[in-house]
Amino acid sequence: MTDRKGRAGRAVDAEPEDSEAEPMAGKPWHHLPDGTFRNPKGCPSRGQGRMRHAGPFFLEMLKMGTRKVEIPEGHVVPRAQAVRDLAAHTEKGEDFLTWLGHASFLIRIGGLTVLTDPYLTTYAGPAGLGPRRFVKSGVPISALPRIDVLAISHNHYDHLDERALARLPGKSHMTVVVPLRLGSFFRERGFPNVIELDWHERHEVRGVSITALPVVHWSRRTGFDTNRTLWAGFAVKSESHHLFFGGDSGYGPIFREIGEAYGPFDTALLGIGAYEPRVMMKASHATPEEAVQMGLDLKARRVVGMHWGTVLLTIEPPFEPPERFLKAADEMGYRPEDCWIMRIGETRPLATGWPSNA
Image (cartoon, rainbow, N blue to C red; front, side):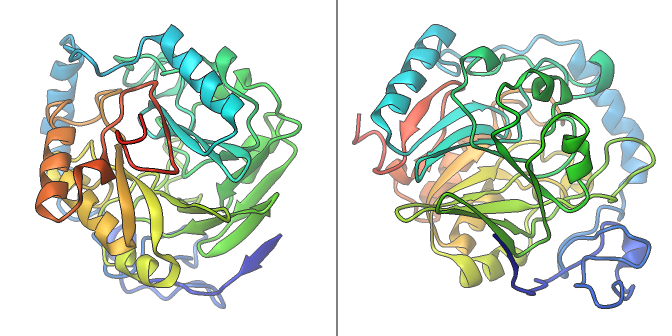
């Protein structure tokens, strides 16, 4: 079932020239007359000051791409163990969370298995181009359990991996939940059950509701489709657990509004990486400190850091985000057991804290 609540949220444009534009007639703020979308009002704009920093940024990224990433011990669960742990939790039938890397999770909630933003192959780009993962997916595609819901936050290559989609089994029975205008991408690739949602619209699958919510980001798959499809986070709610999946997002006042309208949340999965240089990334990705503030704004009991430790997208040290995230969470009042930095391939129960449930 799908229902529109009609709350437009606070909004801003993806580019500065749209900041004062009137929305499309009869539509909420984020719908522009030319058919594109923009961010919630009051949030940063991607356009301001970016271009003069683009050249140095891409030169630095080229240098980083030639360096080998030193992976700390314990960052990754050995694949065979990760597969066994996932199978054991699946057999128990309990709610759990498995981090596959970046923004890709397996979430068992209310009897459903939800897969988010499946970037599961090597490159975050088309035809073997783009940034290359320095850590494999925590669980191979062949070992994934049956997927009931595939939830996609937006169309960037590090969140929407076409090669992984081609290899996913069970396309005919899974429900794909996507933001507006992204549905045809999946129908053309053999997924018959696709639900498109605008911000604040909801769909229910076997008693678990999935609501698309505003976040601060943008979309582009080619050089000619900027902001032609919507981006979103998701609230996933069962009788016993309420989870927020943030997709990609910068920080803005919209998170306090979401917390007031939809909170509290039991668990919030929040991006903590890909934040430097700030002038370029402020309207796309939060810092670790901003991610903790998002959690507070959302009224989230537990915060989980994601979107780090998998692929080099920006110029901050790749293993800096979790240190800053844990420090900020402690300073802002989260207990250690309620601030999670997971290992890639790790599965944790959602019902209780960690590691007290070990």
